[in-house]
Length: 190
Ligand code: ZN
Image (tube, rainbow, N blue to C red; front, side, top):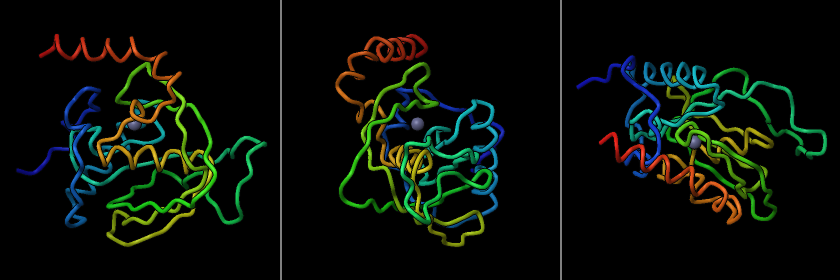
């Protein structure tokens, strides 16, 4: 049955779809493009900078990111040739990440599927992504700053991984009751 993109909504933790390992997109069709367009719309509605397909209930390996230029903070060292923003909303289909060995940094992250929860997550500061665009054409980006951060966060969603799994112990403790609230709310709605 074809998907009606208009019916897609952002789903919240603990929706089980967020924990699945998503399946590769077999072919970049009009349906996939329509879903991507809807995902960009939902990301904007929720003031997000990234949204993965599992977050709209589709266990597909695809996400969208929109990080306006504005640059990283002045203290951040950006390697030559690295992107730190996207030139408008960008769709990544069947993405693969390659992270260099070595340095990691701690930054606070939020997630549209975890309302009111923010926590510190440790990740590498630079990353290379290879993916297909909405025309099915392969592209590669070398990313740093907020873009590198966002790529890794969205990629995690495709493997059923949430920031809850990656937070520092301190953040985990601080957000525990908010996480329980979400679980309780979901249990009541069932
Ligand atoms: Zn997220």
